[in-house]
Image (tube, rainbow, N blue to C red; front, side, top):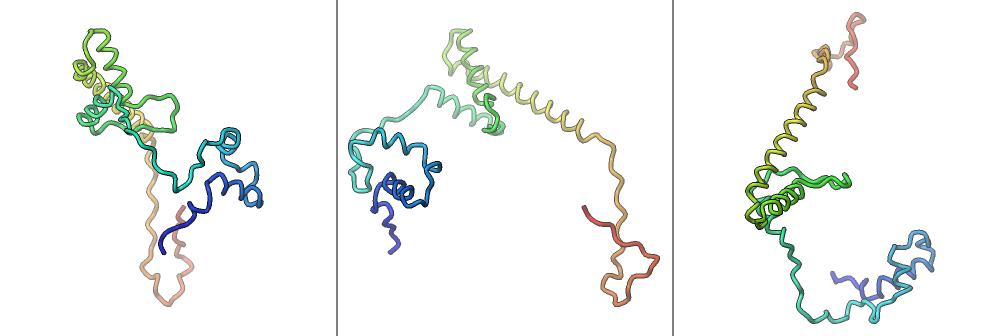
Length: 173
């Protein structure tokens, strides 16, 4: 009884349509594909019992994929790519651009330009890391904070109330 029958009830389109009709989903919250599906419905509805299409699945392989693999193999400590920064290329993309530029200028293949492009990319990464370190050192080179006085917690469990001349422990922030 571990199987779910949700996919057998109907297509995703009929389920979303039912949610909209019943009021469980507002028209503004409908998925992006909903109107496109209404305007251009498929010839055969996508159901669970449709047979899988026959045919060969083509492998998608780009020429630079081998270069990317070699790059990460030779330089496993390459910085991670931030997906939040639009338009800023990754270290691997910079490497591929360098590799293409070197290959075009010298008239050699990308594989032959690999070592030179890797050396220039390593130098650029080392320079950017040292620049980032110097910026962080500038940020952390402020005047040191004065240390807080340690709290006297020696008699914390004693039955006697604290004396009037003792100072309360500092509040942690």
